[in-house]
Length: 317
Length: 53
Image (cartoon, rainbow over all chains, first blue to last red; front, top):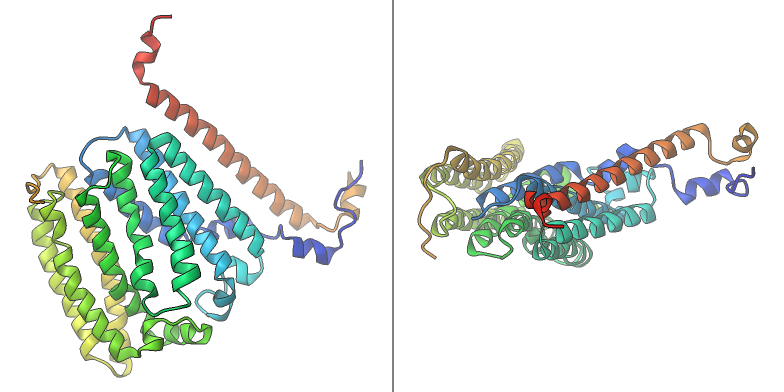
């Protein structure tokens, strides 16, 4: 018996790859982002009119989750150079050297193709196509094109994170309805104030600056970023009322949403007003934390209404 | 077998990692097989057992 690897030196073996553990590969999937994608996609499935067999709903969620993981892996493959420069991301598997870029690329591509095929073949073709478009949008439009080009990167690129509830919805209905567009618009409008609150943190801002990523605080400065955060928040609150017009939600969502919206504006206002010192940093951190919780509660309200069987508004549009 | 391992540039840790990755891949393939099988049954529906032969 001969060893086919016997001609490879140890140095070559390390370059060839094969150093990654299962945990490293799991980290490539960006599990925290994936958990939010699973949750919003699940809400899309529940909120959609019509029924889907529970097993098929499970398959759809699994495919959407794996698709999100694939996008994360491909993002880490392409962004390895800037991830290595930024403290927040330097320990990711590719810049840390435990997984080679080509391994991350192969892993991401296989998962992307697999998730799209599974969703398209086992659930419905439109949902599969929309998942493929979401991965394409996140990798090609956001990661490869906009992220390093314009401070509007997160505004347009945010669409990628807004698609999952729409994919879940389409998995049930087989069509892109106004209700799914309303859910899409909520996450799309929520992303800029959420992400810019994070980008205003001194450490994060320095990271982006060192890596040459043109985030809004780096290019336009913190004051303009604060103004944009407030403007997007003022736009976001009326956008969250759209599901009431499409007949996707009921009174519980509407009433709770008004209270949540006022709190969001209050946090954004504090970020806008407090610009110096530790207090300004704290205001940004509070807005970031609140906005994460805000999205979770908003979508959870839709689930609660369905679970309790509460009446929904009649669709106006 | 021991001789082969001695000549290999891959150490025991490399081989252990490779083994775990292989197991994970096998589990994923098995899950996929179950996924396709159960989905086929679900999509066919219960009436498939009652069809005329």
